[in-house]
Amino acid sequence: MSASTNRGETTCCCDEFQTLLEKWRFRGSYRQRALKLVQGEIGYIHDASFSRLSYESVQDMEAEASLFQDRDGNVPASERNRLPAYLQSLYGIPLLTPAGERHLFRLMNYLKYRANAVRSGLDPENPDRRCVRLAEALLAEASAIRDQIVSSNLRLVVSIARRYANDRTLFDELVSEGNMILLNAVEKFDFSRGFRFSTYTTHAVQRHFFRQIKLRHRKATREAPMGDAVLADSIPMPEGEDRRHRLASQVNRLLARWDECLNVRERQILEARYGLNRDEREWTLRELSREMGVSKERVRQIQIRAEEKLLEFAENEQLVPELDEFSLQ
Image (spheres, rainbow, N blue to C red):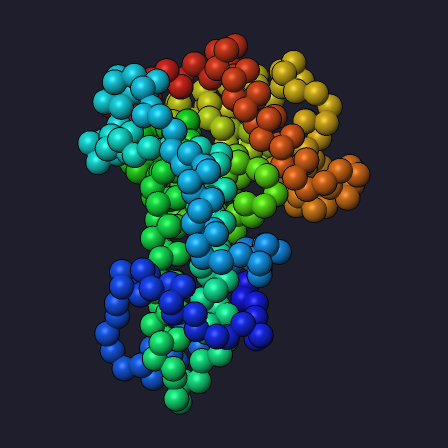
């Protein structure tokens, strides 16, 4: 939901949020601050329970949820050492539990919901100072929670980037772009649907990486057919003329054998999503859901599963041996 007006809920309940008012303080003209609030848009994911909840009751849910997983001891030191120093510190940030995800997303969107209710009653010409301060404090706290969610998921972006990068330059680019996708995913994720945020984000980041690497491949080589170039999205692109020829040959081999690891529906979805069919048009999730008689989310799940199976098959069958020549040293 982009920005509900909540016209009937404009009372500034400052006592309820006294701790936030003491935590967040801003300076400047109240008129200018009120005008900025009114002209801006507060995007949030609405939940029907918000109108019945108080700030205290939402906070109390944290006591019932274990926010963070136990310290992650399953990551070998060798894996961390392969990363740049500035990324190794990510392994010191605790990961969120499913309950922790739901709590933080609920709290973040609830704070935005309340901020939007306060904002809707502001008069920039004669603003209520209490309401201006409250709206700013609510938004600041929501931003802090968003940053906490992002920090706990940065490691996920790094792990996905490592699967697609063949050198440090591309790796750094993918991490940077993946972080932007992560930020956008936090704003759009609907916690009430019961899915894990990590699953939602993985698809969004992978989808973006596929598109970016496809563009790089099209610039780097012209001899492989379009369908082959699309399948090569999951394969790092070596530099140099000889390696480009070898890669095209390897992709052809993968294309010829992908029916060994994918079922008919999985192949149909990948062909449609990445333009491998005759018309070379990339279908949307909505179009495929209508064509196949299933939900968009089901199509998304099948696509993710098919991509993972294809990558695993290529590695197990050594269809792309040049992958071994590249590492993030």
